View: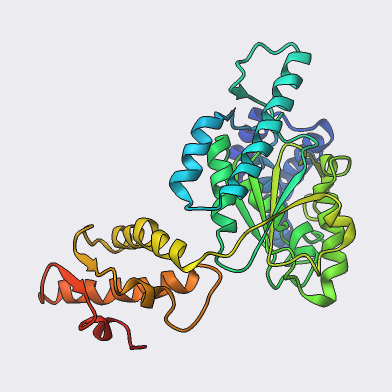
Amino acid sequence: MGKIADELSTLRRKVKELTLPPQLASRVSDDIEQIDRLQNDITAVVHIEQMLDYIDLVVSLPWNERTVDALDLVKAKEMFQKNHYGLDEVKDRILEYLAVLKLRGTDLMKREGNEETDATLTHGSFARRAPILCLVGLVGTGKTTLAKSIAQAMGRRFVRIPFGGMSDALELRGQSRVRPDAEIGLILKGLRYAGTKNPVMLLDEIDRVAEHARGDIMGVLVELLDPEQNKAFTDHYLDFPFDLSEVLFVATANNTATISTAVLDRLEPIQMPSYTDEEKIRIAKDYVLPSLLKESGLGPDQIIIDDTIWPKIVRPLGYDAGIRSLERTINTIVRKVAREVVEGKGTKFRVTEETVKSYLQIY
C-alpha cells in the first residue's frame, strides 16, 4: 500500500497549496483521513480508488487560476484579417462586441479601485453579464476558427465542447459518484483541460443534439448561459457548486430552428455568409494551400497550381457553401505530390490542364 501513501502525501500537499472553498476543503480532508485509515484494508480497494479519483479531480480544477485579459482592438483586427479572408461584417460585429466587453471591464475595474491599465484586465471582468455570441452558418463557413480567434485576441485559453450527436444531458453535467463508472461532465473537463476558470468556451453545434434529449440539454444550456445561475453550476460528480461566471461562452449552430426559445433569448446570433467562388479561390491560394504544404513538410514552391485550374478545384462536384470540400480536394493534391517527392520522381510539381487528372480522380 506504499503507492497509496505516496498519493495521499501528494494530495495533502496540493490541498494545502490550494485555496478551496471551506466546505469542500473539509470534505476532501475527511476523505483523505478515511483513505489513510482504510489503506491496509484489501476489501476497501475500490472505494479508496474512487475517493482518490475524486480528490484528484478537486485539486486539478482551476478554482483560482485565471489568465490575464489583454485586448488591443487594433491588434485584434489585424489578427482577424490575417486568419480569416472576407467576413467583414462578421468581423465588425465581433470587434464591436469585444469593444463593449473591454469598456465594461474597464468600468468595473475603476469602480473596484483597481489601477490596472486599460488594455490589461483580470478576473474575467470582460465576460460578466456579456451577451453570448452565436455564430450561425453552414458547415465550413469558419465558425470554429473565428471562435478560436476571439480567444486569441483576448489572450484567453480555448476549449471546445462538441454538442453534435449529444444524447444525454449528463454528458454536460456529469454522473453521480454512486455509479461505478461515474465521471465528470464535459464542462468541468474543459475547465480542467484549460487550467483556468476564465477560458473562451465554444459550445459547438448546439442545434445538433439528439432529439430525444433536446429538452434536458437545452435546460443545462440555459443554466450555463444565465449569469444568475452559472455562478453556482453543479456537476453531479463534483457535487459542489463551481463558479462559471468568468467563462466567456461562444456558441455555433447550423441554424436556430431546433434551439429552444429560452436558450435563444440568451444568445446574440451572428449570421455567417456563404463564400463565393472568387472568395474560395483567394482563401485556397492564401490560406489553405500554404497551411497544408506546411503540415505535409513540403516547401512553399514545391506545388504550383495554374490559375485556370483553381475554378475546377473550388467547384469539382457542384456548389458548397463552406471550404471543407475545398480543403479535402487540395489535401488530395498535396498528399500525391508528397508521395512523388518521397519516391524520387521530382522536387517541384505543376498542376496544369494536362496534369490535373493525375492528381484528382474526378477529372
